[in-house]
Length: 233
Ligand SMILES: [Zn+2]
Image (cartoon, rainbow, N blue to C red):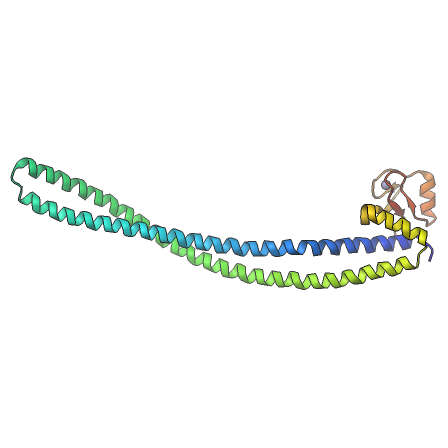
């Protein structure tokens, strides 16, 4: 078979197809990793929220205990105050009661605030739990899509490579060596369509001699970039 521009066009298109499929195969693990990363993120958001609730609850419990202890002390102070032997002792206990009552009131506010925060976090926890379930389902779906696509692409790649090999078998040994040399240096980028009077790869204007050769349907190398040029369809 003669190496016409339609043959080179076909070979180039096959090479681009192969490069595209190889790219898809190479990207697949990354895509799966991204999908799984989203599940990990959702799961860690959920467990962080759960931990925060636990800490806040412990904080509220600790404050409630502190409040009860202070209440018991206040009761004790009130008894002692009523039995005070002198005015100084009475006043000192009265001051202590006032200070502790104030402290407990502050504590009450803090406990209330913490309980409110826990309520809000519980609502958030529920949402995060739903989000995790949704993300897991989405991940499962996209991983299975990626894997099934991957299988199709791998099968198509084998076909494309064997088609390329059988086309090359029909061409002269000299051209095949030249073709392999080009593929080894730049793969599909070693070929380009003629673009008007320029090279479609490097966009440099082509000398008249090269243009004439191409117009006769004869593929030839670009003198500027070395790509194998052919006429567009
Ligand atoms: Zn060029």
